[in-house]
Length: 81
Image (tube, rainbow, N blue to C red; front, side, top):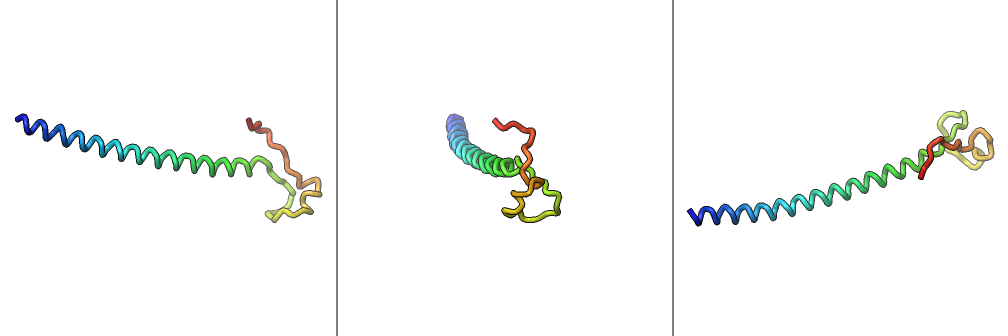
């Protein structure tokens, strides 16, 4: 009876250490993924703050666009802190 109990305790300890390592690995991957996604969304947010409305169809903005008064960026009502 005593040997069986010791065997179960050893198995539990081994499994517990394996489970802790696995959990730490998954948490590290989750944190890396979260940071990557937040950084990507941050880049999209920065590019979306100024909206250009030239009154034209989709086109590539050139230096000529910025001299026209209708193609200047409009400041959004969002306040970025």
